[in-house]
Image (cartoon, rainbow, N blue to C red; front, top):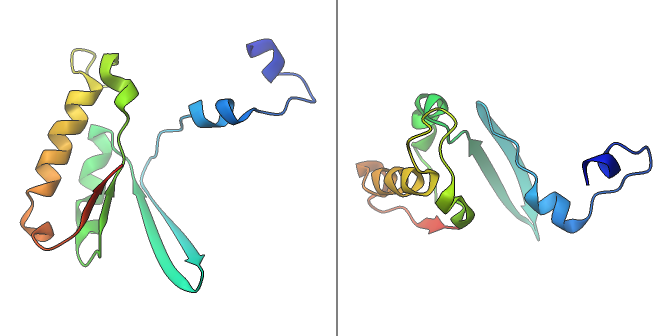
Amino acid sequence: RIDEMFKKDFEPTDADILRARVATTGIIRTDLDIEGTRFQLWDVGGQRGERKKWIHSFEGVNAVLFVTSLSEYDQYLLENTSRNRLKESLHLFYGIVNLAWFKDTPIILF
């Protein structure tokens, strides 16, 4: 399949797009307007080295959307090859939902 991807006329399939992964570095803000309702999404890097950058982004949020991948059950962190990615994600989720900042904040696990 890799040979196809380098062809000039290559167009990705839906499956190609769904399987694409780009690691977030830093904090990326996206503004959305859905039927007159304005949303601000803040995409923060989940890698261990990125986490210290986004701890200050939590103040004043209306909800937290925590996105994780069940397909990572057999994968390991790039920065610690002995640590399972799904277990790391669960550990991070537990830490976030138990922060005092989020006592009254809706948390959505996706």
